[in-house]
Length: 220
Image (cartoon, rainbow, N blue to C red; front, side, top):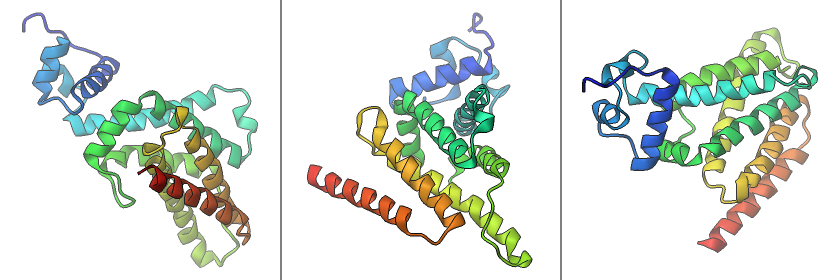
């Protein structure tokens, strides 16, 4: 005990993610985590209250790191809204795939629904900020409905984001290539609905999801 040391936030995240994969679930306690990785358990509470708060921070960090990665590209500022959105999705889900075992264990532990999900509460703040930065233009409506529609746009993209996570969880393709296809089709559909009444992208997305559902049943 006397040799246990304080740790950085980055160390704590690394130790915790490693433990979840090794144990195939959360450690029994913060004290047990500290004993295995030889750090003072009090150091944990300097950063997080409990494992749930740490889980939330990890998902937010994965999203924020994705945004930061894009910001480092000299070409990114010149991208249009669609390419910025696609780039973020591709980068974020690549980060999820790199940590797939930890992510799947954690998501299945909490359960994923399209309603309020506590695990993503901090991530959603970053997500909403990103969507706001794109300044998506709603369809022409009366001024009394404009504020409501802008909020609906943001929530619509959030639902689409959750649907993409749900699709990624069951993606059995190599390096999750099917998720990349889903991202492209679903983002195209979402943006199409903002600008036109065309059903082309909706039908295209529907065909893809139907084909994947049939394949899934055939493999059962």
